[in-house]
Length: 416
Image (cartoon, rainbow, N blue to C red; front, side, top):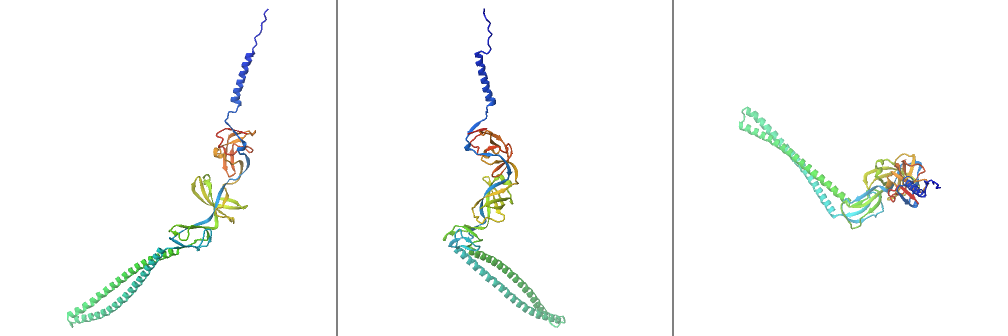
């Protein structure tokens, strides 16, 4: 008798099929759910800088490398030209105001001075002669007027006497008319004499005024030529250090040519360059400090130059009270310029990462320490050491702060 056998569901074939199906589902689940599909890059730890995020006091300042310069520098240019006959000093010498540095020779200048002086002397003589002639003419006119007054007095007496005699029919009319004409002629002559005197005085006054004006201009020219002759001896305008003198005996100097440079070393200023990012926050009166030979010196911004070159602008700073005794031209000092008040915050050490990210994201090390993950952040103010973290990081986080230029745009860095 045949036995009915129940067909098994889990046959070998079906087991193998379901096994492959489960493996496939598991693989797909791992690929799409469990596996990390983000872009990765293997990075050696020795090639990166890892910094810790910390909570602390944020001091808003920048460090400016400033160069010491004399408070005042005088560029000494030749006022007149000539060739050098004497050189009294050398570069690096200390000079006093009025010290002769060079002596020049200029024959043309000397000739012009002599001609101008001769012309001035001639004008002086002409002016003296004109004034003398005016006085002589005035005395002569006074003498003529005096003689004319005497003749006029006599003519008047004759006319008045004959007038009475003619009225009494004692003399002829012709005699009366003759004395009348003599009297009137002398009156007219006196009037002409006075007019002549007035004209001569006015004319002489004009001549004298013209001569005086010409003489004044000529004497000023003589003064200018004399000053130019004095300028043949080139003198130091201030006390200071003769930092350079670029001429030798026999050198021909042209007018306006730079001869030397004198530094006023009674004081120094510090000149530095600052990134244009801070141009709105740097102003005259801003405080700073520097440390030199273990001593702290306070400074104040004295001038801000508005011109921006290569993304930077210049500032001048002055020492507030005392300056380092050993300071010299060209000495470089780091200056801390305070931009704001200190306050507590989350601090991210500065580094090369900012150039690629602009402070918008960083690579944060995970708890295992084996990988770094890209994370968005927000940064605030910056000083020479730290950025102020506004969001995205907390105290204790570890961040890669070296340059990201070799990482491309990878989201995860596998650390080896």
